Image (cartoon, rainbow, N blue to C red; front, side, top):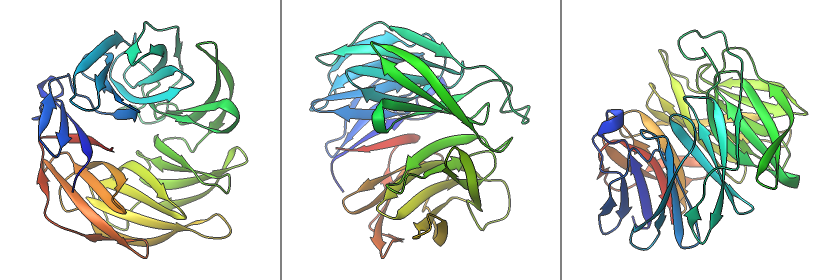
Amino acid sequence: MTGLVVGTYTADMGGAGDGLLMLPGGRTVATPSPSYVIASGPVLYAVNEGAGTVSSFAADDLRPLSTASTGGTWPCHLALIDGYLLAANYGSGSVSVHPVTGGVIGSSTDLVRHSGAGPDAGRQEGPHTHQIVPGADGVVTVVDLGTDRLVDYRLEDGRLRRLGETALPPGSGPRHVVTHPNGRRYVAAELGSALLTVAGGEVVASVPATASDGHNQPSGLVRSGDHLYLANRGADTIAAFRVDASGAAVPLAEVPCGGAWPRDLALFDGGLVVANERSHTLTYFRLDDGVPVPSGEPTAVGSPTCVLPL
């Protein structure tokens, strides 16, 4: 398989990786635990989870271009919106906004901090922003695992104006969200090990993330047409769901991920690529009528945390 950028956990976060890795070619650049990466034209943007910063790199050779502080701790997700880079700081429960000019990240123009907590004392002692999702009509949704909320903002002149929020079941611990053309939002609930369906500002359905027994923490969630694919850490599976005409997410199949602790997954070459953090591998699947089928041999990568097809 070709055309991938992989972010890894480096020693600062207990990992065994090198930073950013480009496949094929094996080019690398050392940067502190780039646990999420996005691309825009010739530029890559990465969080440095262990350092509380965001960085940009040339996409062709991983040449460093800039680095800026997020003003928070453990940044874990990014979005580029209207010339601004937004970073979710998981540790401090905040979102920073940075102007971007020619691939160079500037100092933050805004830093919004969430407040509150959830019933899981070990994981929800405070807010934990986990994902930033650009939406229709300029709405930006921030997923907060710590407070069980989807918080909506509008980005205006480099600042975030709060619009409202959607409350999710207490203790569900939302991690990632995808939106379907039917207008519904599907939420990977990490702490509740479920896939939630949100419509009209409320949860209308919940299905288990896995059929397996035991502790499980869903992670990455992607959509391909009417199919949803969810990575399950603990069960170590990929669960496939089909969105039916009513908007319900119907379990379709669940297959072993081919490794341990699938941290992220992405659509790639008509199939899926999965980053297995604890087995230090990438695994590949073709999609057969929506069902993931293993394809090819795993690729060895130290502590992969995110995958980005170019």
